[in-house]
Image (tube, helix red, strand yellow):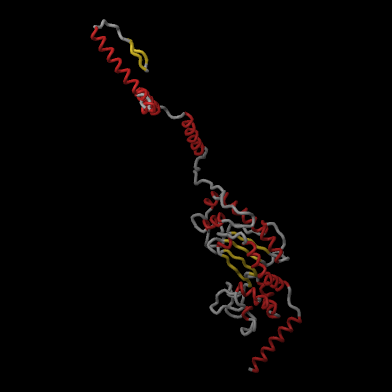
Length: 372
């Protein structure tokens, strides 16, 4: 008998059958064919694979899983991993005797950049790290060199843009390249107890032929400022300023008493508690009259000063504002009359008319005091 199935053809050896056996075989074969026909026309059977196909799929899936489990890893991945390991080994193999790797150079930030003329948070973040003594050393700074160069470039762009605005405010300011206005970030530690090698902020000066002018410094922690005037001038310069004050203080008095000047820097007189106010209360201010000056001199408050300068501070959010350079120029405009006045007082000695006028005013006040 030969039975055909979907898996192939099976052959069996023919044996003589009895009549009864033949009848039984015919009945069994008819039943089998009816069952198969029922399966073929049953709706559920039309959607499903035959048992054999399902079993075949299961066997194939199992076989594939078994093969995948025993399959070796990709030679490309092995090669890539070996190459990376070799590169790491080469880094260490390239070291000379006594050398060691101390860190990895940090790349300049690629996000958070701003247009020229603005200060970014990236620059403030770098400066903030310099406040930490652990970071403020040469090894750390060397690894941060790309970050510093990025901040330096941003600072130069800001100074160049601000200089254009400053010249509109003060025609005496020359249009110099940023490198001539910017201060170095390296500290002079020769005579300082603080041996950290780097400053904690960026700064620049804008002046006329090296004379006293405007100073701008930027440091995170709400410590940014703009200042103008003369800080602890030399002996001869200070003597000239005081001589001009004794002759005629009128111009200086008018400058520091101007309404806008007072709005920014305070009342034009010493603070009752000795705090900084207007040009008064600066470091080094004398407690008594200068040598050769009467302690009751009418301008003793000005003559006690060792520095003649004003300061205006900014918080971090103001510095990071896109329009900060314009705000800075507005303050510089208020400072400009003081700068011009001091430059003249350090180089020009008052004439006799001024001297006579000052003496007349002094004598007039003295007469009034005597009458009282």
